[in-house]
Image (spheres, rainbow, N blue to C red):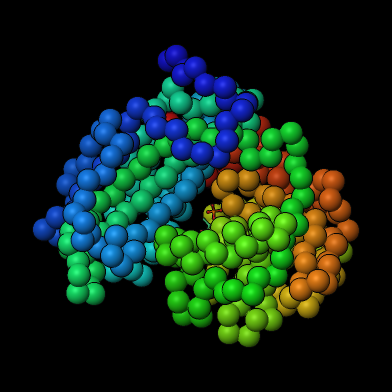
Length: 341
Ligand SMILES: *Cc1c(COP(=O)(O)O)cnc(C)c1O
Protein backbone atom coordinates (compact mmCIF):
# COMPACT_ATOMS: atom_id res chain seq x y z
CA UNK A 1 0.00 0.00 0.00
CA UNK A 2 1.31 3.39 -0.99
CA UNK A 3 1.47 5.97 1.82
CA UNK A 4 0.07 9.47 1.33
CA UNK A 5 2.54 12.19 0.55
CA UNK A 6 2.60 13.77 4.02
CA UNK A 7 5.52 15.39 5.84
CA UNK A 8 5.12 12.98 8.78
CA UNK A 9 7.81 14.56 10.95
CA UNK A 10 6.19 18.00 10.81
CA UNK A 11 2.58 17.15 11.57
CA UNK A 12 0.86 18.97 14.44
CA UNK A 13 -1.84 17.63 16.70
CA UNK A 14 -4.50 18.82 14.26
CA UNK A 15 -7.26 17.55 12.01
CA UNK A 16 -6.60 16.33 8.50
CA UNK A 17 -9.53 14.73 6.68
CA UNK A 18 -8.68 11.20 5.54
CA UNK A 19 -10.47 9.05 2.94
CA UNK A 20 -12.93 7.11 5.09
CA UNK A 21 -14.85 7.36 8.36
CA UNK A 22 -17.29 4.99 10.07
CA UNK A 23 -20.94 5.87 10.76
CA UNK A 24 -23.70 3.94 12.48
CA UNK A 25 -27.14 5.32 13.39
CA UNK A 26 -29.38 4.36 16.30
CA UNK A 27 -33.11 4.53 15.48
CA UNK A 28 -36.21 2.78 16.84
CA UNK A 29 -34.15 1.29 19.63
CA UNK A 30 -31.47 -0.38 17.49
CA UNK A 31 -28.13 0.31 15.82
CA UNK A 32 -28.02 -0.08 12.05
CA UNK A 33 -25.21 -2.14 10.56
CA UNK A 34 -22.89 0.81 9.99
CA UNK A 35 -20.92 1.90 6.93
CA UNK A 36 -17.67 3.48 5.88
CA UNK A 37 -18.28 6.76 4.10
CA UNK A 38 -16.25 9.43 2.35
CA UNK A 39 -18.58 12.13 3.65
CA UNK A 40 -16.86 14.09 6.43
CA UNK A 41 -19.96 16.24 7.06
CA UNK A 42 -22.56 15.54 9.72
CA UNK A 43 -26.04 16.83 8.86
CA UNK A 44 -28.41 16.95 11.84
CA UNK A 45 -31.53 18.85 12.84
CA UNK A 46 -31.05 22.34 14.34
CA UNK A 47 -32.67 21.11 17.55
CA UNK A 48 -30.55 17.93 17.90
CA UNK A 49 -29.99 16.79 21.48
CA UNK A 50 -26.24 17.17 21.17
CA UNK A 51 -26.57 20.84 20.12
CA UNK A 52 -29.06 21.80 22.83
CA UNK A 53 -28.01 19.78 25.88
CA UNK A 54 -24.52 18.51 25.03
CA UNK A 55 -25.47 14.85 24.94
CA UNK A 56 -22.20 13.56 23.56
CA UNK A 57 -19.31 11.34 24.67
CA UNK A 58 -16.05 10.45 22.95
CA UNK A 59 -12.90 8.34 23.01
CA UNK A 60 -9.33 8.76 21.84
CA UNK A 61 -6.77 6.11 20.88
CA UNK A 62 -4.01 5.60 18.37
CA UNK A 63 -2.83 3.31 15.59
CA UNK A 64 0.81 3.18 14.61
CA UNK A 65 3.33 1.19 12.66
CA UNK A 66 5.52 -1.20 14.65
CA UNK A 67 9.20 -1.96 14.04
CA UNK A 68 8.27 -5.06 12.01
CA UNK A 69 5.84 -3.15 9.78
CA UNK A 70 2.45 -4.07 11.25
CA UNK A 71 -0.25 -1.50 11.91
CA UNK A 72 -1.58 -1.98 15.44
CA UNK A 73 -3.84 -0.30 18.01
CA UNK A 74 -3.37 -0.25 21.77
CA UNK A 75 -6.06 -1.73 24.07
CA UNK A 76 -9.15 -0.64 22.07
CA UNK A 77 -11.26 -2.93 24.28
CA UNK A 78 -10.71 -0.52 27.17
CA UNK A 79 -11.86 2.41 25.06
CA UNK A 80 -15.00 0.44 24.16
CA UNK A 81 -15.66 -0.30 27.83
CA UNK A 82 -15.04 3.29 28.88
CA UNK A 83 -17.37 4.61 26.18
CA UNK A 84 -20.00 2.22 27.49
CA UNK A 85 -19.65 3.74 30.99
CA UNK A 86 -19.79 7.25 29.51
CA UNK A 87 -22.89 6.48 27.45
CA UNK A 88 -24.74 4.94 30.40
CA UNK A 89 -24.07 7.97 32.59
CA UNK A 90 -25.57 10.32 29.96
CA UNK A 91 -28.54 8.00 29.21
CA UNK A 92 -27.28 7.18 25.72
CA UNK A 93 -27.43 3.78 24.00
CA UNK A 94 -24.27 1.69 24.25
CA UNK A 95 -22.43 0.88 21.03
CA UNK A 96 -21.55 -2.80 21.58
CA UNK A 97 -17.94 -3.52 22.54
CA UNK A 98 -17.13 -6.05 19.80
CA UNK A 99 -18.65 -3.79 17.17
CA UNK A 100 -16.68 -0.84 18.53
CA UNK A 101 -13.40 -2.76 18.21
CA UNK A 102 -14.30 -4.05 14.72
CA UNK A 103 -15.23 -0.54 13.59
CA UNK A 104 -11.93 0.88 14.89
CA UNK A 105 -10.02 -1.77 12.97
CA UNK A 106 -12.12 -1.26 9.83
CA UNK A 107 -11.55 2.51 9.77
CA UNK A 108 -7.82 2.18 10.38
CA UNK A 109 -7.55 -0.43 7.62
CA UNK A 110 -9.47 1.80 5.21
CA UNK A 111 -7.07 4.66 5.97
CA UNK A 112 -3.86 2.61 6.11
CA UNK A 113 -2.21 5.07 3.71
CA UNK A 114 -2.50 7.69 6.46
CA UNK A 115 -0.87 5.61 9.20
CA UNK A 116 2.56 7.22 9.72
CA UNK A 117 5.53 4.96 8.94
CA UNK A 118 7.62 3.51 11.77
CA UNK A 119 10.28 5.83 13.12
CA UNK A 120 8.59 9.13 12.21
CA UNK A 121 7.25 9.63 15.74
CA UNK A 122 3.86 10.39 14.18
CA UNK A 123 0.74 8.26 14.77
CA UNK A 124 -2.83 7.92 13.55
CA UNK A 125 -5.20 9.39 16.12
CA UNK A 126 -8.58 7.64 16.29
CA UNK A 127 -11.63 9.52 17.52
CA UNK A 128 -14.82 7.50 18.22
CA UNK A 129 -17.79 9.59 19.38
CA UNK A 130 -21.49 9.31 20.01
CA UNK A 131 -24.15 12.03 20.08
CA UNK A 132 -27.91 12.62 20.19
CA UNK A 133 -29.27 13.54 16.75
CA UNK A 134 -33.06 13.99 16.89
CA UNK A 135 -34.83 17.21 17.98
CA UNK A 136 -34.95 17.60 21.78
CA UNK A 137 -36.30 20.79 23.33
CA UNK A 138 -37.90 19.60 26.58
CA UNK A 139 -35.00 18.29 28.66
CA UNK A 140 -34.72 14.53 28.14
CA UNK A 141 -32.40 12.06 26.44
CA UNK A 142 -32.54 11.93 22.64
CA UNK A 143 -34.20 8.92 20.97
CA UNK A 144 -31.83 8.80 18.01
CA UNK A 145 -28.04 8.78 18.03
CA UNK A 146 -25.07 8.63 15.72
CA UNK A 147 -21.80 6.83 16.44
CA UNK A 148 -18.86 7.89 14.29
CA UNK A 149 -15.15 7.23 14.08
CA UNK A 150 -12.76 9.41 12.15
CA UNK A 151 -8.98 9.18 12.10
CA UNK A 152 -6.33 11.83 11.55
CA UNK A 153 -2.54 11.58 11.38
CA UNK A 154 -0.87 13.53 14.19
CA UNK A 155 2.74 14.50 14.79
CA UNK A 156 5.03 13.52 17.64
CA UNK A 157 3.82 15.22 20.81
CA UNK A 158 7.24 16.58 21.69
CA UNK A 159 8.89 18.00 18.61
CA UNK A 160 12.58 18.64 19.09
CA UNK A 161 12.73 16.73 22.37
CA UNK A 162 10.80 16.52 25.59
CA UNK A 163 10.23 19.74 27.54
CA UNK A 164 8.95 19.54 31.11
CA UNK A 165 5.78 21.53 31.71
CA UNK A 166 4.98 24.30 34.15
CA UNK A 167 1.47 23.98 35.56
CA UNK A 168 -0.64 25.98 37.99
CA UNK A 169 -2.99 24.95 40.75
CA UNK A 170 -6.33 25.99 39.27
CA UNK A 171 -9.00 28.02 41.07
CA UNK A 172 -11.74 26.52 38.90
CA UNK A 173 -13.03 23.00 39.49
CA UNK A 174 -13.09 20.38 36.74
CA UNK A 175 -15.59 17.92 38.17
CA UNK A 176 -18.08 17.71 41.01
CA UNK A 177 -18.13 14.83 43.48
CA UNK A 178 -20.77 12.43 42.12
CA UNK A 179 -20.76 14.41 38.86
CA UNK A 180 -19.40 13.44 35.43
CA UNK A 181 -15.62 13.77 35.92
CA UNK A 182 -15.12 10.01 35.53
CA UNK A 183 -16.69 9.82 32.05
CA UNK A 184 -15.29 11.08 28.76
CA UNK A 185 -17.94 13.66 27.96
CA UNK A 186 -17.52 16.79 25.85
CA UNK A 187 -19.23 18.75 28.62
CA UNK A 188 -16.18 18.23 30.87
CA UNK A 189 -14.06 19.90 28.23
CA UNK A 190 -16.45 22.80 27.50
CA UNK A 191 -16.17 23.95 31.09
CA UNK A 192 -12.37 23.62 31.06
CA UNK A 193 -11.87 26.05 28.14
CA UNK A 194 -11.86 29.19 30.26
CA UNK A 195 -9.45 27.65 32.74
CA UNK A 196 -6.97 26.58 30.06
CA UNK A 197 -7.15 29.85 28.11
CA UNK A 198 -6.44 31.88 31.25
CA UNK A 199 -3.68 29.44 32.28
CA UNK A 200 -1.99 29.97 28.91
CA UNK A 201 -2.41 33.75 29.21
CA UNK A 202 -0.58 33.58 32.52
CA UNK A 203 2.22 31.49 31.03
CA UNK A 204 1.27 28.02 32.29
CA UNK A 205 1.04 24.92 30.14
CA UNK A 206 -1.73 23.17 32.08
CA UNK A 207 -4.03 23.30 35.11
CA UNK A 208 -3.80 21.06 38.14
CA UNK A 209 -7.38 20.60 39.33
CA UNK A 210 -8.11 19.86 42.97
CA UNK A 211 -11.04 17.89 44.36
CA UNK A 212 -14.05 20.21 44.35
CA UNK A 213 -15.36 19.20 47.78
CA UNK A 214 -12.33 19.99 49.93
CA UNK A 215 -9.81 21.52 47.48
CA UNK A 216 -7.03 19.72 49.33
CA UNK A 217 -6.41 16.69 47.08
CA UNK A 218 -4.89 16.50 43.61
CA UNK A 219 -7.26 15.28 40.87
CA UNK A 220 -5.94 15.63 37.31
CA UNK A 221 -5.43 18.17 34.52
CA UNK A 222 -8.02 18.97 31.84
CA UNK A 223 -7.11 15.88 29.81
CA UNK A 224 -4.44 13.82 31.57
CA UNK A 225 -3.98 11.93 34.85
CA UNK A 226 -1.13 12.57 37.28
CA UNK A 227 1.60 10.12 38.08
CA UNK A 228 4.11 10.95 40.82
CA UNK A 229 7.33 9.26 41.85
CA UNK A 230 8.38 9.41 45.50
CA UNK A 231 11.96 9.96 46.62
CA UNK A 232 12.16 6.25 47.49
CA UNK A 233 10.99 5.40 43.96
CA UNK A 234 7.36 4.41 44.50
CA UNK A 235 4.89 5.28 41.77
CA UNK A 236 1.85 7.12 43.14
CA UNK A 237 -1.32 8.11 41.32
CA UNK A 238 -4.29 10.01 42.78
CA UNK A 239 -7.47 8.07 43.46
CA UNK A 240 -10.85 9.79 43.27
CA UNK A 241 -14.26 8.97 41.85
CA UNK A 242 -14.17 12.18 39.79
CA UNK A 243 -10.96 11.39 37.89
CA UNK A 244 -11.25 10.06 34.32
CA UNK A 245 -9.73 6.56 34.32
CA UNK A 246 -6.87 7.04 31.84
CA UNK A 247 -5.94 3.89 29.93
CA UNK A 248 -2.36 5.16 29.65
CA UNK A 249 -2.15 5.63 33.42
CA UNK A 250 -3.60 2.17 34.10
CA UNK A 251 -1.11 0.68 31.63
CA UNK A 252 1.81 2.58 33.18
CA UNK A 253 0.93 1.29 36.66
CA UNK A 254 0.98 -2.26 35.32
CA UNK A 255 4.33 -1.58 33.64
CA UNK A 256 5.74 -0.09 36.86
CA UNK A 257 4.75 -3.16 38.84
CA UNK A 258 5.26 -6.02 36.40
CA UNK A 259 8.09 -4.79 34.16
CA UNK A 260 10.07 -2.50 36.45
CA UNK A 261 9.36 -4.15 39.80
CA UNK A 262 8.32 -0.86 41.41
CA UNK A 263 5.87 -0.42 44.23
CA UNK A 264 2.72 1.39 43.10
CA UNK A 265 0.06 3.19 45.12
CA UNK A 266 -3.34 4.40 43.99
CA UNK A 267 -4.58 6.63 46.79
CA UNK A 268 -5.63 10.14 47.72
CA UNK A 269 -2.77 12.57 47.12
CA UNK A 270 -2.84 15.77 49.16
CA UNK A 271 -1.64 18.94 47.44
CA UNK A 272 0.39 19.42 50.64
CA UNK A 273 2.60 16.38 49.88
CA UNK A 274 3.38 17.25 46.23
CA UNK A 275 6.46 19.22 47.31
CA UNK A 276 7.95 15.95 48.62
CA UNK A 277 7.76 14.04 45.32
CA UNK A 278 10.80 13.46 43.12
CA UNK A 279 9.04 13.34 39.74
CA UNK A 280 5.69 14.25 38.23
CA UNK A 281 4.16 13.38 34.89
CA UNK A 282 0.87 13.70 33.01
CA UNK A 283 -0.48 10.54 31.39
CA UNK A 284 -2.68 10.34 28.33
CA UNK A 285 -2.86 8.86 24.86
CA UNK A 286 -1.51 12.01 23.18
CA UNK A 287 1.94 12.12 24.84
CA UNK A 288 2.02 8.88 26.89
CA UNK A 289 3.78 10.86 29.66
CA UNK A 290 4.55 14.58 29.71
CA UNK A 291 6.97 15.41 32.50
CA UNK A 292 6.07 18.27 34.83
CA UNK A 293 8.99 20.39 36.01
CA UNK A 294 7.23 23.02 38.08
CA UNK A 295 3.90 23.42 39.85
CA UNK A 296 2.84 26.91 40.92
CA UNK A 297 0.32 27.30 43.74
CA UNK A 298 -0.68 30.95 43.91
CA UNK A 299 2.85 32.26 43.71
CA UNK A 300 4.37 29.41 45.71
CA UNK A 301 6.62 27.38 43.41
CA UNK A 302 7.15 23.65 43.72
CA UNK A 303 10.17 22.72 41.61
CA UNK A 304 10.43 18.97 41.00
CA UNK A 305 13.98 17.67 41.52
CA UNK A 306 13.87 16.23 37.97
CA UNK A 307 14.14 19.83 36.73
CA UNK A 308 13.15 21.67 33.55
CA UNK A 309 15.48 19.96 31.08
CA UNK A 310 14.39 16.34 30.93
CA UNK A 311 12.12 13.63 32.27
CA UNK A 312 12.92 12.21 35.70
CA UNK A 313 14.72 8.84 35.55
CA UNK A 314 11.76 6.70 36.63
CA UNK A 315 9.34 8.62 34.38
CA UNK A 316 11.78 7.99 31.53
CA UNK A 317 11.89 4.24 32.27
CA UNK A 318 8.11 4.08 32.39
CA UNK A 319 7.90 5.97 29.11
CA UNK A 320 10.52 3.82 27.38
CA UNK A 321 8.92 0.59 28.58
CA UNK A 322 5.35 1.46 27.59
CA UNK A 323 6.36 2.88 24.20
CA UNK A 324 8.57 -0.20 23.74
CA UNK A 325 5.51 -2.40 24.27
CA UNK A 326 3.43 -0.26 21.93
CA UNK A 327 6.05 -0.25 19.18
CA UNK A 328 6.71 -3.98 19.44
CA UNK A 329 10.23 -3.73 20.88
CA UNK A 330 9.11 -5.38 24.13
CA UNK A 331 6.69 -8.22 24.62
CA UNK A 332 3.20 -6.94 25.42
CA UNK A 333 0.90 -8.32 28.09
CA UNK A 334 -1.77 -10.60 26.64
CA UNK A 335 -4.40 -8.65 24.67
CA UNK A 336 -2.78 -5.20 24.79
CA UNK A 337 -1.91 -5.00 21.09
CA UNK A 338 -4.53 -5.46 18.36
CA UNK A 339 -3.00 -6.09 14.97
CA UNK A 340 -4.89 -4.32 12.18
CA UNK A 341 -2.75 -5.51 9.26
C1 LIG B 1 -8.97 11.09 27.84
C2 LIG B 1 -8.62 11.68 29.17
C3 LIG B 1 -7.47 11.29 29.87
C4 LIG B 1 -6.45 10.33 29.31
O1 LIG B 1 -6.94 9.06 29.09
P1 LIG B 1 -6.17 8.04 28.14
O2 LIG B 1 -7.09 6.89 28.07
O3 LIG B 1 -4.89 7.71 28.78
O4 LIG B 1 -5.97 8.74 26.83
C5 LIG B 1 -7.26 11.83 31.13
N1 LIG B 1 -8.11 12.74 31.66
C6 LIG B 1 -9.22 13.16 30.99
C7 LIG B 1 -10.10 14.16 31.63
C8 LIG B 1 -9.50 12.64 29.72
O5 LIG B 1 -10.59 13.07 29.08
